[in-house]
Each structure stands twice: as C-alpha cells, then as structure tokens.
Amino acid sequence: LKQEALAKVTAAQSEKELQDVRVAYLGKKGPITEVLRGMGKLSAEERPVIGALANVVRDDIKAAIDEKMEVMAASALEQKLKAETIDVTLPGRKPKQGTTHPLNQVVREIEEIFLGMGFSVGEGPEIETDYYNFEALNLPKDHPARDMQDSFYITEDTLLRTQTSPVQARTMEAHKGKGPVKVIAPGKVFRRDDDDATHSHQFMQAEGLYVDKDVRMSDLKGVLELFAKQFFGQDRDIRLRPSFFPFTEPSVEIDVSCGICKGQGCRVCKQSRWIEVLGAGMVHPRVLEMSGFDPNEYSGFAFGMGVERLAMLKYDIDDIRQFYTNDHRFLQQFHTK
Ligand code: PHE
Image 1 (cartoon, rainbow, N blue to C red):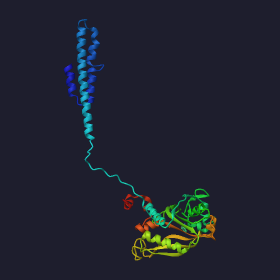
Image 2: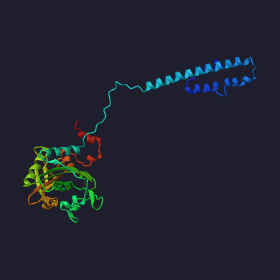
Image 3: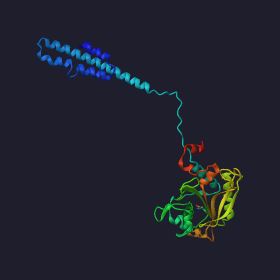
Image 4: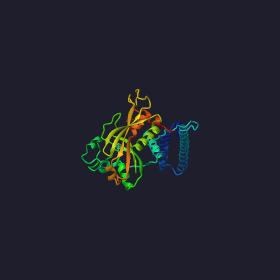
C-alpha cells in the first residue's frame, strides 16, 4: 500500500493531483483510516503492531506529499518570477509632456508687450452683472447694440460676460477717480453663436485701458502700432477706420497689414491688404463719469482685441475650433521646449 501511494505521489504532475492522492490514501474513506477503524476487531497482541505500522505508513505518505507540495510551490514561484523579469537594460519610454496652450502663449506674449509699456495686468469675473457688462458701458436696458452680442443669461441680472470691457468699469471704480489707470485684462468671453471656422461661443479677448490727464487719440495709435510691430513684426503697419461702440467716442476699428503675401492672396488675408484685429476708441465721458472719473479732468483710450484672431493671423491657423478641440497633433506644433 505504501509503495503504491508513494509511486502516485511521484507521478503526480500538479498540486491538484497531489491533493487527490492525499484524499485517496489519507482521507476519511481511505485504506489507512479503515485499518485504524478496524483495530477493535484485532487481538491484544496484534493491536500495537498493526497500529504502529499503520501510523508509520500514514506518516511516510504524508511526509512524501508535503515534501512534493513544497517543491511544486517553489517551482511555481520560480516560474512566475521568471515570467515577470524586468529587462533593466531596455531604454525608458518617454512620457508625453503637456505644454502651454497656444492661446495662453499668445496671452502671455500680449501681456509681456504691454508690461513693457508700463501697463499692469488685471482681471474681472467671467460671470458678470448686467450693470458692468452693459449699463456701466453706456448700454442701457433697451439699447439696440445689446443685440450685437447675443448673451448667455444666468438670471435676469447676471450673465456670462460678452466682452472684457466690464473690466474697464471695475478697474476705474477701484481707482476711485484718481489716475493714471493703465491696465491690460485678458480673459474668456461668451456669446450665443453657432460654432464654425471663425466663430466660437467661447473665446478670449484682451482689454486695454489707459486713463490719465491729457490722453489723446495719438497715444492710442502709438501704443497699438508699437504692439502690432512687436507682436507681428517690424514690417507691419496699422490702419484706423471709424466705427461705433457705445462706450467709446470716437470709436475705431484697427486693421493690421498682411505680412505674408502683402495682399496678393494667402490663407490669412485672402487678397485684402488689411485685416481687422481690434476695436478701440476714446473712453466715452459718460463711462468715465459712471465709474467715478471727472471727464473734465481725465480722458482715456480703451481697446479690445480678439486673442484667437491674433493667434490665427500670427500662426496661419484657419479654424478657430482648433483651439478648443485639443487635437494633440495641433497642440504639439506649439511645444515651446
Ligand atoms: N468690447 C468690444 C467688443 O467686444 C471691443 C472694444 C473694447 C471696443 C474697448 C472699444 C473699446 O467688440
């Protein structure tokens, strides 16, 4: 019996087979248990002999099974370790690194240029009150120009700002009627527009405001000409065209000359020598007054530029949606390092 059991232990190929051998020979229904159970029927002389023999056989079989179990477990572990070896000589995989979004790069560039001209950087809330977004900018409740900027209202009195111009009013209020005020305020704005290649319901503007004694239109022109040359290149010119905004008087739209083909026809200018980049003007006396500045003492200019517009012209990008869909192939081209 013992020889037979040991042979099966040797033959067992897996832990499961070994377990079966254990059950078959040492289990409750196995032959050894049977022998031990039958002891009562034996004579007093036979009992210790058979009992001792049965115990030895059981212990030997158990020891053989345990030993083989251990060997199997050890080899299983070894196999597992072998399968999981790490080849430390393989070159590492470089993780893909993010980079500053092209719009934020442009915003920073705008900020740098204006900081160089003595402006400071300001900001205002994206959720704005009707008062700051419209009223304080000389757009009373029933003003038709409110329709120019289809708004996302949150309540009757609050909305997502449609322009960065409310920062003008907030900044002037904070200065409590004392100049100079010289600030640039970039940020997100929102309009109820259907998105296409040139429209986005969310985009960015950079607002500029300079209020002081004796600020003149020629200052506006000088500052923006300097900006255009630094941002686009020294060969660029600007052009002022009369326009209308309720919060500036007079108002202008400013074009920058096409630098790539000089109007001969390229993706950017499509055969026009001038491209509109921003709205501007002399701060309306009523706007100065509403925000606590005496229009007899102070004057100022303001401008608002479309950040995407500037970025598209500078980098020859023909679809504004590129900035908001986060296609890695697009963003990768603006890696700075
Ligand atoms: N806020 C205007 C717009 O969004 C631009 C502007 C700003 C015009 C400041 C004049 C002065 O169209």
